Amino acid sequence: MSDSCCDGHLDAAELEYRQRRVLIIVLLINVVSFVVMAAGSILSGSSSLLSGMLDNLGDALTYGLSLAVVGASHLAKARVALFKGVLIAAAALIVATQIYRHFLHLEVPMVEAMGIAALVNLFANLICLWLLTPFRHSDINMSSVWECSRNDTFDGVAVLIASFSVWIFGSAWPDILVAIILLLLFTKSALRVLRGAWNELKKSS
Image (cartoon, rainbow, N blue to C red; front, top):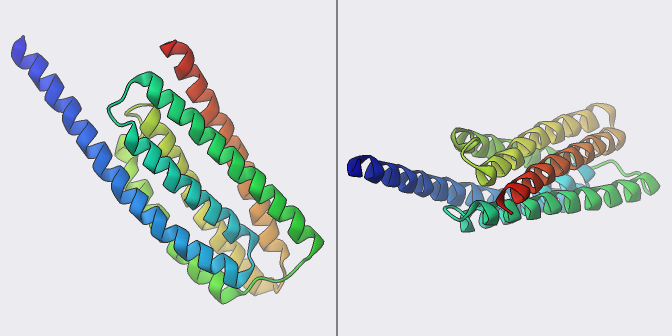
């Protein structure tokens, strides 16, 4: 009986160690990706790249928060997940504002900067998703982190498609349309994370 309890304690400690390690790795990857996306957004003037940049910034903060509550109580994890949902919703609001501004001043983004940043971002997102997938059902904390990473992957694919479409058509509209799609994705994801966090808060209260 004692051996069984010790084994359970060791398994939990090992899981927490692995969660912390993977969160540190994806945090560093997202910081680098954010810098690349920020440079690409400034150089190209792309709305979809801006949305990806904000998403990476939000995710870097999210991974830092998630790292802080590994091994914490369900209540603490639920509160952090709630904050993550608010961050995603805030990113959606910023993207909506940027889309409105680009509607007023249509400018074709610089395709070269947009495409390079999009490729780097997608590669980074795929690595993060691969690292986080084994932990997606561990708890509300890791589940919400995986949700953010999955959104990043969709984001990366969408921005790459936008850059290719801008190059083909020589128009700003593909960039704006992709930014609108990402806005809808942000909103849906924010609602899902907030709903899950709220349910966990009610269970813990």
